[in-house]
Length: 510
Image 1 (cartoon, helix red, strand yellow):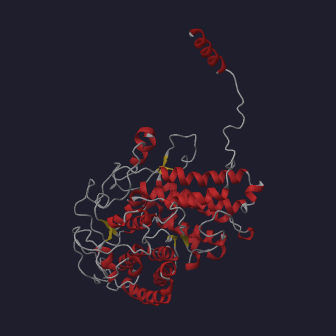
Image 2 (spheres, helix red, strand yellow):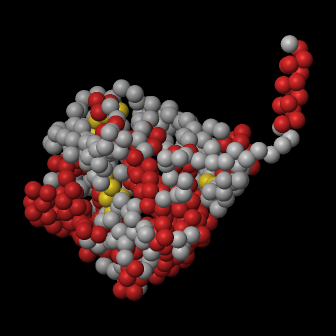
């Protein structure tokens, strides 16, 4: 028996030194063995917009005080814990980067050509990649960027956030200029169904958005102003920006085996209420020039018909976020909290408000009043078109009246917190309108609120983070200090203060 065992061991040892051809045993005989560009693109987009849970979807709705928590209140109270970014890097960005590389290397193949003009395919993947990188850096600050998608690099450097923004803007311009509308659409496009003219408009709109996000960085204003105005001054030749509801980017969820659906619908609805601060603002409860108390920010005094889309019980108070957790019962509307309900990706209202703000800052010669008015009207029309189409004309008419009232507020130098400063009054109204128009997309609203500072929000009275302030970022993932200590240390160093906390400020937020 012992001799047989020794023989077998010897055979295994000797055999281990030989090369064997195992043929195609690692290939799936049923599934595809080559990448599918259309599936990679669609998968990346839907993985991004299908992310659910508080960390990946709803936390910022507490930070900007749209919603409150009813039972599990730690996020509403700013609990500081590391948040993993792998769902965005591994399941989203890797799709876009792999697609870009595969299409570029196989652009003449029949498979690639069958899915559309290769440059158009690459351009769309680049636009989505740039957008997602902006999304992640807005959350954390410095992040892996230039080396992040190299599978052989296990410790990618953390790029400075301002450098990342420059890279994002350049990639968006490159993608926009690659698009050839005469070559037709592409497959896998679950946003615009292959309409390349709309992708050009989205790319330009994202350039405006990214440039404006650098507005408070002292040594970046000339650069940001230049990139912003370059788009606005060449709208006729560069493809334009999103100006019409029909050109907007929305994600349309299809309820298939409960795998792909609006992320709100996967949350326990009884755990959430709208905030009293938000419902008061929509109902016009706080009047112009009313004193700002610890519980009552200053908003316009005009009722906002958008409450009928946002709230399941229009006219009801929400929970009092800043003063207590008592009372209230208004919840987010079932029009939005629905597996099949669409969610905005990028709308005409957002673009108009960016342009209005840039005009107020002196970046362009556009008329901010016209842009502010058009933005509000576009918000009303877009929401009605997607959620209450039977009331479209009602919302369109009221939106025009509401917009005129808000322009009048912006023209009042004593509006709200402006204290006689005409520019602050304009920026305050624009900030408040962005706050409403971004609903229910919390991450976008959070980025805008951190930069603009309006509306004036009072932190929770029982905070769980270090300073008691509304979070300015997410803390880096738990394993980064261990597995990428050099990158992590450089990222922390660029925070103010240089501590990995959710109330430290990222480079564009200083």
